[in-house]
Image 1 (cartoon, helix red, strand yellow):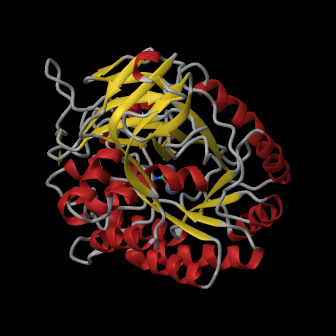
Image 2 (image 1 turned 180 degrees about the vertical axis):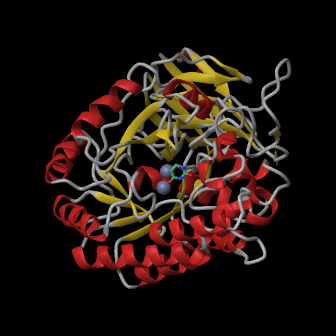
Length: 477
Ligand code: DUC
Ligand code: ZN
Ligand code: ZN
């Protein structure tokens, strides 16, 4: 099966050119000047399918390197399965995810890995890889880190918060980092001081401050900055590379920037919610509404300027990439577990479908360039997590994961209503992004050469996605 995407503007992180893209089977085989012939043959009449991308951008498929499909968490389970969540991702122009295998204290890392492979197998609409969460760092976990590298799991997430659930103490973190420093894997860190947060939460509830706003007020930026600094110091001590996930506080950004200036292999990820949403406007919404936006790290104050600073950090490369931390819960039956006690609201926001659009709006509003859009949503995730070459770029030899994006189209994000055109396909009974208007539209999505979204229709199938066996991060030597 040969496909020609003609007349488009091909956008890579390195630049934008008018070009035709030739695909043979699952692979891009040529990027050519528009209307080129090949060995004297007219290409258009020698392919099976021609897609006209005139006036549109042709970009590498989005890579969301931080999702939690069907994750057991907060006394419930994230509402998107691997099937529904990856289908929604496809709708939004994301063609690969990297999800997290969960290991709770006492569990075997390798058993959990096998379990997560089973959950995802034959269910995903797009390609998928795994990071591994380590909670208690047992001796067997250190051996598993080597074993998992061979399986293509080259990154390990640790938590400095959620005591009794995920939290690793500093000794456990140091042990895992020592291993990463020797086997070349990446340590990912949820950087918030869990003990401080637990105390503030207890005090807030005891004082009768139970509304969702207090979720944010009990997870202050100081707890994020302190933990980010501590993680950087432990990485410095051990020589491990460090990737700080879901950075929301400008003070944490400053810690990451300082470490990078110091020559340390430290990287930072933010999420759309920390670029657009805020403590005052969202977590502080009337009644229980704010529960829609309870996630950790929390939304930060707009008055303090965190969002503005985060866009700036994306431009200056103090922050390298944008994932979603997609961890959706419905209001009814899940988030409402926390009515009267914000600490019982399951933590998470669903955005996997909207990340490409929301970041494109950053191009429209001159917060980032067109090429930087591609870089932070696709190219850097591919490089950071050992997929580049196959993913994250439109070039010969790459997987034909291609999105045709219409800058003249429009996307309105509303509530998921019955009987109307759906404005999202995530398994959620509300949208964290209701009311957002995007001056662009995902037109066509190809996953390894197969058209899976076309003309506002999903035409892929469950099980199209293939497991991504990842290499080491390409940012490390
Ligand atoms: N934060 C969330 O909001 N949800 C999942 C886990 C996390 O760290
Ligand atoms: Zn986290
Ligand atoms: Zn997460």
